Amino acid sequence: MKYLILMMALLVGSPVLAADVIEFADGKKVDGTITSIRKAEKEFDFSPQDGSTSTKTVYQFSDVHRVLYQGKWFVLTPKSEPSARAENDSDGSGSVTRSKAEVLALIEAAGKTPPDWFESTPLDYPKTLDLSWPIRPPKGPWQAHKNMGQYIWSVINENPGRWHSGIKLIHHCVALHKDDRERLQRDMRALGSAYFRLLQDYPRAAFWFQQGKASVDTIDGIRLAECYWRLGNRGMALQMLRSRRLNLGAIKLYGDMGEIDRALSLTGAFVKSGNDYQANILAADALRQAGRYDEAIDYYQRVLNSKRWRNEEYEDRFKARAQESMETIRLYDQADLSRVADGTYRDSSTGYNGKLTVEVNVASGRLQSVKVVNHKEKQFYSSLTDTPAQLIDRQSVQGIDGTSSATITSQAIVNATAKALAQGTR
Image (tube, rainbow, N blue to C red; front, side, top):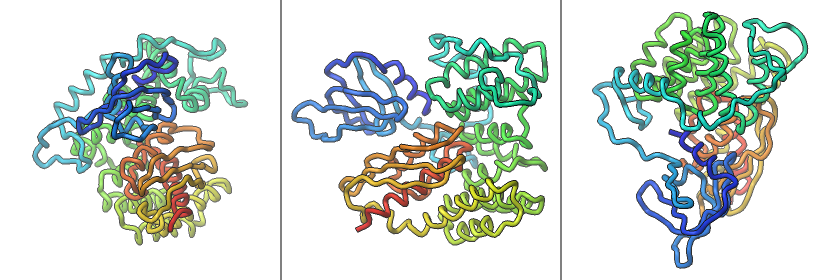
C-alpha cells in the first residue's frame, strides 16, 4: 500500500551512514549509500559502491521494493500479494481479489487499529480553532485559523507535513462530538475522506465512511464504493452504484473500473439534468483512459460546445482542460519515448486552480523523472507525486489512472508531460 511510503518520514534529518542496500521487486540488490531523501518528491539519492553495475543515482520510491538504511529495512513499494482470484470477481486492475467477508474483515481490523505513525504524531492545531465545528459555519470572511472546514481545506490539504497531525485532529473531533449524532457522522465522513484523499489508506477510509453512513448520492459514498473495488471486491462496488441517485463522481469510478458503457449511460442522465460540461469531461477522461481516443475527442468537443456554465471562471477552466486534453491525444505519437531525445523539458497544463508545470527528464529512451515544479492546486496533493510515479512506471502518457478522485490534477500532469515530451521528438 502506498501509505507505507510514509515510513520514510522517520528517516528525514537522520545522519547518513554507509552500507545501505536497495532491493528491487525482482529481488536484485545494490549496495551503496543513501545520501539524501526528499519525502515530498518521494525520491532519494543513492551512491552505489565501486564496482556496482548500477549507475543510477536518483530513485523514486516506486522504483524500489525496500531499502536497508542505517541497519533497518523500510518497505517503499510492497510486492504484489499472491492470491487466487475469486470466481467471477476479478476487478481487472491486477490487484488482489478478496471475498466480501475478507474485505469487511480487513476494513474492520484497520479501523480498530491506529496507523503506525499515530502515537508519535502530536495533536497540533491553532488554539483559535473552533473545535465545535458547526455543521453550518457562520457566514463571513475566510478564517482558516478559526473555521475547522477551512483549516482542513487550506492548511491540512496543502501541506503534506500536516497530513498526519490533521488526521489526528479529526480523530480528536470524533471524540469530542461523540454525543452529537449529526456532527459525529460528519466528522467520521471527513476522517474517511482524509484517509482516502491524502494517504490512499483504503481500509481505514472505508471504515470511517461506513461509520459515517456515507451514501452514493454524495462523493463520500462514491469513495466508499471505490474503496471496496480497490480492496479487491468489484461486486461490492457495483452493488453500491445500483442506486437511482448517484453523485457525479460515479462516472469517473465506472471509467476507472473499465465499465465504460455504464459511465456513458450515467453521463447521458447527468447531461439531461443540466450538468453537461462536468459529466462530459469525466466521460471523455474515461474514454481516453480506455484508449478510445476518437470518442474521447468527441466528448471533449461537447464540453467546448456547452452553453450552460456555472460562471465564467468555470467556463475558462473546463474549456482549457478539454482543449488541452484533445491536443494531448493528438501528441501521443510525438510523446513516444523512443522518439524523444535525451534532455530535460518543461511544459504546463490547466489544473483545478490554474496552470500546473512539470519538468521531465529523458535518458536512453526512458522517462527518468517527472516533477511538478509549479502549481496552484488546493486539494488532492497526493496526485502530485502519485501521477508522476505512474508515468515513470508505465513509461508512457497513455492509460494513466487518475489518483482517487483527483482526475483534474492527474490529467493536468499527464497533459503537461505529453506536451513536454513532444518538445524533444526527433
